[in-house]
Image (cartoon, rainbow, N blue to C red):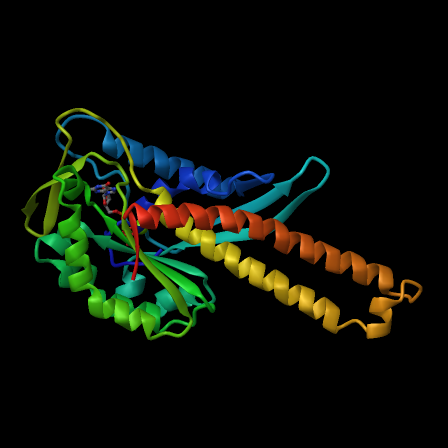
Length: 319
Ligand SMILES: Nc1nc2c(ncn2[C@@H]2O[C@H](COP(=O)(O)OP(=O)(O)OP(=O)(O)O)[C@@H](O)[C@H]2O)c(=O)[nH]1
Ligand SMILES: [Mg+2]
């Protein structure tokens, strides 16, 4: 999770959490949070819900600033009734915004190193109200991400936060136009890193009913939807799809490398002749790696289909 202080990294993670499970569809897969992760995310999700409920005036921000880097761990478990195995571990790091903006972002880069996906949270109010440079620091952020040692194919997903006001007023087009305009050179910087593959952008609503009212000094003030619709998060599955897609691609690639390694490390004669010592374990190990790659490729295809549908309906965009 990346972005300067207060742009919504922790809120986004809390809002994505209920969707993480859903977007590993069928095929005997489930995404299981580790107990500590579950406890922390349940608490955060509860706070987000509280933020979206109550009277018109927002008096409590609920989600506090993140004081130190915090990891969240999930196991992607495959269970077909006979076998139960963990095929993939998903680890998400939530970091304080200052890690990105202080000290040339060196602390953020520690967490970005070796990662497959990053979410770059952007405050829509600042973007639309002339505070983009000060709050969202697009150039600094792009440099921090682009100068990190990312895994090959790393996906970046720019996520517009606090955007309810524009969706509610039917002005999402304006919001995306501003994003493309004010983050154009940042996107070019990202594409300058050969390890960065896909760059997506989308907008999510973590509570769905907070509207920008005014600035009190540099602080934006929000009011709740007077219609009393309550907590109604929207589009939070979009960044999840990007994450899942890239994670699966990385693991499938690793599984393919593993198959190649198993083949390369086995003598040709052992590979071919069932009577040779080592032939049985060669067959078994290769079979396991192949089954894993095949299983994950199927899930990956399903996720890819969902992503393409979202791109077509213009909820998710590619840069
Ligand atoms: N308007 C609006 N505000 C929200 C929404 N969701 C969260 N917030 C507010 O945004 C504030 C900042 O969000 P955080 O998630 O703490 O931001 P962060 O990027 O994690 O900040 P640091 O951890 O300090 O770097 C929170 O205090 C929430 O009250 C939303 O849907 N709409
Ligand atoms: Mg935070």
